[in-house]
Length: 168
Image (cartoon, one colour):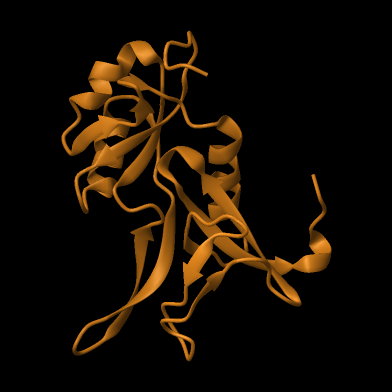
């Protein structure tokens, strides 16, 4: 699907670091439909802990617009570029954005997850096996469903019951 479509589609906007929420607000003020998926995490300060909402995909915000409004989006403060290939903007698959929207509005716990594929070499970065390298193949007794946004090569991971999954 090229960025020259005649209908509004979802696009991934690359933002300045820590400007995602400001970009979302600016896009909404301009009459566009932004979507900034957030996740909650605990942040530790010297004197207290606080639950904060953080962008699920740092430095990215999604926005639905007609390709003719590309310049309107690019002129938004905090926006660095609209993702694409070969100099042309490229829409994010509608199903991927809908899956992320369903995830963030649902009851399941989720968190950011690097873009991983089965069989990929990985390294454990936390826990008793920190530093161990291996190949990602599967998890016993529990399953992790990873909802990815291919264009930005990021995803979100959620633990689910393996009996709730079927092959497509």
